[in-house]
Image (cartoon, rainbow, N blue to C red; front, top):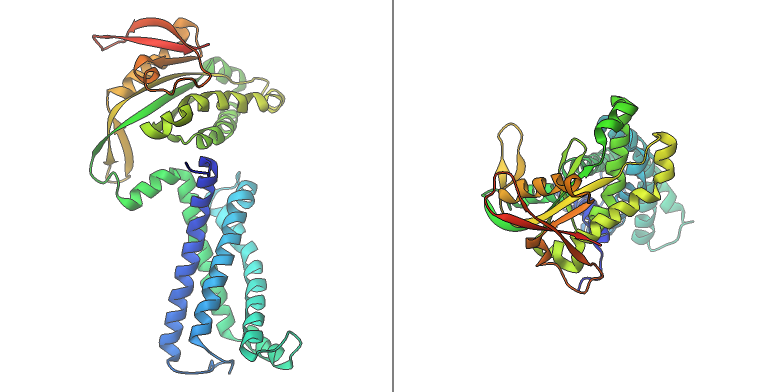
Length: 364
């Protein structure tokens, strides 16, 4: 059994690329430097001592520490601080901030390196002479530019990952859906109630602001319960799980109630800013789909299959039956029992375009 929650796993997956990129960049720089310096024992521009083996050890450790610090800071704090800024402004502002951090980091690392090289302490005159030579040389600027470029690539990766979805980006890299595959998945179609009247009351711009906040407030619940956001369709969110992740601990059902709780906890904010508290209804179903990459100008990973149409129709029946949650019998049979949920039959419904009836359940 995994001791890490989906939220913690996502945090690790988002920070790890920073560490990997910094390690790769530092190794590339070291080997380029080695190719230029060859068997030299000193840097020709500064006459500082050069030891390739020591440089590898110090650089890898520094890359891991710096990548971890930058990645953690970005994911946990800094990215949220610039949430409202445009893509380009985020990158520019962050790089400007990190230039200062990089300079401090390089000076500290160089100082430690000289202390190790001379087997002395911080107050040794040779340490300060070599440090002065280092920071006043063009090599110092080149190192700053190289690290800032690495940070820029890392930030770009993080922004792209956040925009198209981490799991989607990972699947593009691994080529999981390069060729169509069949898999069984669970879907939840979640739709805001009375969205048309809310939009008319708020106006299009204010409604869009509320919708953005609404999506943001629901996101953590989806991540915590191992779901992925497949699509945003107007005020509707389509959430999906692989069968094993969705059924484990009844993640898919717990997700719905966590989303309800998330909105309730933010009720004061919505009432103060928008004068309304959005609520939602949802339909659940599971079945086989075909998944694969599609498109030429813009590639996306698409799920196709009758299960999506059926789930959408189940969600559409929530108003008909006066329910906020409807679940197909197909999924109810697979859910873990003795989970604290009580499932009640609502009706056997004939869905548009389907010959057979499907039994629908709600939770009481």
